[in-house]
Structure formats: C-alpha cells, structure tokens
Length: 603
Image (cartoon, rainbow, N blue to C red; front, side, top):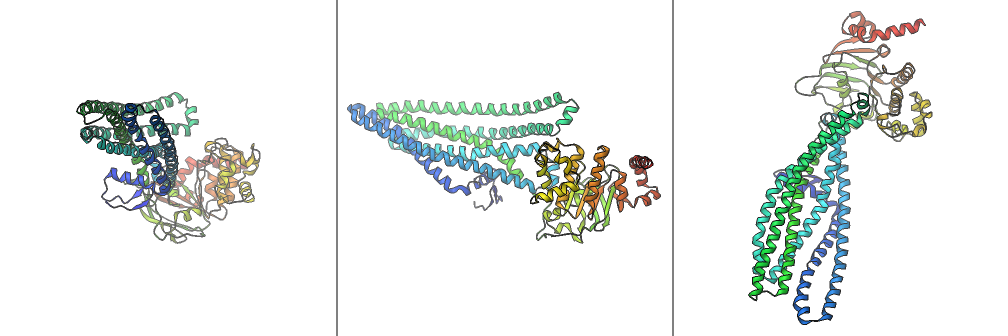
C-alpha cells in the first residue's frame, strides 16, 4: 500500500491499520539519516556474517585438525579466527556508533517537534490537561520510542540476519535436520504473538500511570507554598505514594507477563536443541553427518534459538513501544481549535479601536459565558469591567487576543475582524498584565526582555524606570542579573507586578488588557504600582478588570457585566445615579476604598 510522508511522524493515514500506521510514522523519523543508517547497516551485516564463521571453524577443527593431528593447521585456523574477531569488533563499532548517533538525533527531533506542536495548541487544550502528563509524554515516552527505533531495530536486524544465515548454512550441512528444526519454529512464533498483545496493553497502562504520578509531583512542586502553609506535606506524600503504588501494580502485571514470556520461549528453544541432538545423533549413527558437522550443527542450532528468542524479545519490546508511540502521536495529531485563516494578514500597526459585535461564547455546549455582547471602544479609551464573580470579565479578556474563538459574533480591531489577522501579529499589538503575575525562573533581565527580545540596555532600563522597578532591581544582589526563582518567588508581590509592567512597557502594545489587583499590596507598593500602571495606560486602548475604586474613576467608561451580558454602561457618577447593579457593587466592593480616600484627604 502506498503512502506519502508529510513530515517526520506524519503520514497519509487513510486505510492504514493503526499498528502499521504507527510503524510507518516512526520509521519516517529515520529518513533524514540514511547515510549513517547505511554505514550502521554495513557494519551490522559484516558483524552478523562474521559471527557465523565460528561454528564452521569448530567443524573444521574437529573433522580435520584433530583427525590429522595437524598442529600447523590449528595455528593457522586460530590466527584466522582472531582476525575474524578483530574485523567483527570493528564492524560492531561502526554499527553501534552510527545507530546510537541516529537514536540521539531522533530524540532531539521528536522532542522538538512535540514541543513546537504544543506551542501551536490553544489555551483550551491546556485547560483540559495537566502539565505533568505533557512533560511525561515529551520525556519518558520519547525515550521509549528512541530505544525501539535504534536499539531494538538494530537487534531485530542483527538477529534476523544471523537467523537466516544460520538456516542457510544448516540447509547446506543437512537439509533433513534443518527442516526438522524449522518445523518447530511456528510453535514458538505463535506463543510470542499471543503474549505480545498482552504486553502492549499492559505497557500502555504503565506509561499512563507513571504520567499520573508525574502530574501529582508537578502540581505539588508548583504549589509548594500552599502545601506548607496548610501543613499538607504528609497528605501529599500519601497522595504521591498512592499514585506510585498504582503505577507499581501496573508494572508488576507487565513484569508478570514478561516473566512468563521468557521462560516459555526458553523452554521451546532448549527443547529444540535436545531434539536436534537426538535427531542429529541418529544422522551421525547412520553415516549422513560427521561428528564435527553435528557439533557445528548444535552451535548453529543454539544460534538459531538465540536469534529466534532475540527476534521474539524485540517483538515484545515493539509491543511495549506502541503504547508510548500512541501517546506521542495523540499530541501530534491534535489540531489547534484556534487557527489562522488562509491568507491571514500581518498588521504592522493598529490604532486600537475595538468593536465587539453580537459576541457569544461558552467553554462547553451546555452554557454560554458571554451572551450577545455589543460594545464599541474608541482608540485610546480606558474601559473598566466590573461585575460579580462569573460575570464573564476574564472570558472577554481571553477572546480579544484570540486565545479562544467566539461561538457567534466577532471582534474587530480598527474595523478588521481579528480572525483575518495572524495570531502572532494580533498578539504583538496586545499587552496583558494578569492579576496573578507569574515570572520565569531566570533573571530579572530575562523577564523584562521577554517583552522585546532584541531591546538594548537603555530600552530595558527605561522601561524598568517607568514601571518604578529600576531602584529595587539595583538593590538586588546582582541587579538585573539576579535570578528571581520559580514563578518569581524571590520577589515580593509588588516587585513582581512592576517587573511585569516593565515587560509590557517594553513591548509597547497599542492595546492593553489589565487585570488590576493591588488589594494584597502594602500602601507603598500599591502607590508605586498604580503610578507605573498610569504610565503603562497612557495613549493606549485599555480594558481593565477593576478591583479598586481609583481604577474605576480614571476609566472613560465602566462596563457592568452580569451573567454574561452588559447590563449597564457609563461613568461612575452616571451609574451611581441609576441605583442599579453597579451601585450595589460599589457598596460591596468599592465603598471601603472611598472611605479610605476620604480619610486620606482629611489628613
């Protein structure tokens, strides 16, 4: 059946059985390394062929040297045999080096492809999955695939060549005894195939359970502060131990099947040798086989048994690998639900006017989070979003940079539907400062430069100064080169926010999405952050999820959301005069701020 390779790991899968498709996709990763594979194959063929010389030499020694008592011939044969072993060692080096090189390259290629593909998937994909599971697939599963594509394939080819070569030589020596041996082989092969399916299914489960344990550990490491603050170390140890125990029980089942597999195959192999000795002995007694040929035949028979066992063992490894490859290809086969339209445009600059037209969206089919949102936002306007929890404020944030696509309606920027703009181009003009500021674990410099990778030192420090971050950065141990730790744990909340603001300033977006949250900061940090935010919002279209009264009051308009709909729209004084939902929210959420501001004014 013909197929067309689309890219490493991707083939035309129409009408191809699942297992065959997996193998074709796996073998596609080898195509870029044909020369090295050819060299490895040459080494493999020579090593396999030279390994068949030894039994023939033993036959010659027994039938000629010992019968004729020729010491010189024995010396010559021994030297020749040593030369054969030298060449076999060189051939084995050629094979092993190039195959292992290809194996390491395949690991790199597959991991890079997986990682690149994961970058194309939308936020929805990550919302439905745990990070630990993805890490498991990109690490341990790929390692399993590498082992099969190089080590196991090499063993399979070598054992197959040795098996075929041995059978050809045995046919030459005594076809009757050879056919007797070949008649025994279907029994061994049948047992191998019967147990292979069980090994594949159990191996897949082991990989899944190991991934589950990895997820537990990854979650705890990410939330270690919460674990310790709630004194849940013992609970988390128990949870991890439970996950590991489940993986252990699955591994024991796999071990059981493997343990059954080996002895059964071994029994048939050694039973075959016993039958060879019995049948061959009668051949010697009947004068159809010499003693040397019988010894040679037994060695070749052991070689056939070992090679058959090797081939069958590799088959069981292949079955195990199919589980890992299935998990890898599940990711590669996942298509992003947010995709660039054919002919999507790159936009060099935007003014920042935003139009929401009859916008509706739901994370699932059961309930809409946003319903028929219509809103016109002028370029440079500041819009504050307020509303009770679950009203749809964060969801609206996620739709503007196209983290999700609306179920109906659309979003226009400067009159152009954002679905007609490339995602990378659209997001280049949008800056986001989230409520929970998360930094990368590298240095302060790396975190700020994330907003503009090619910015020079002057641009970076200017952004930091505007974000009120430069002074505290210079007080750190290594200044801008200070490592902030996992998720920025070494910095305070206000410091993390100012670094995030500096990053957004360096990006210099036309549209700013700001989930403003300073309630957890001390007064000094809050003042510095508010000043930095004021500079960040200057001359930019800004949409803010408002948490403080000061933010609401600087907004040109306030959008009040409730149950996914816009229920009120206007300035603070106008909405207070209506005595609607905004007035109720003010009493619950903003009045305390108002009293604080009034007391500060009196002082």
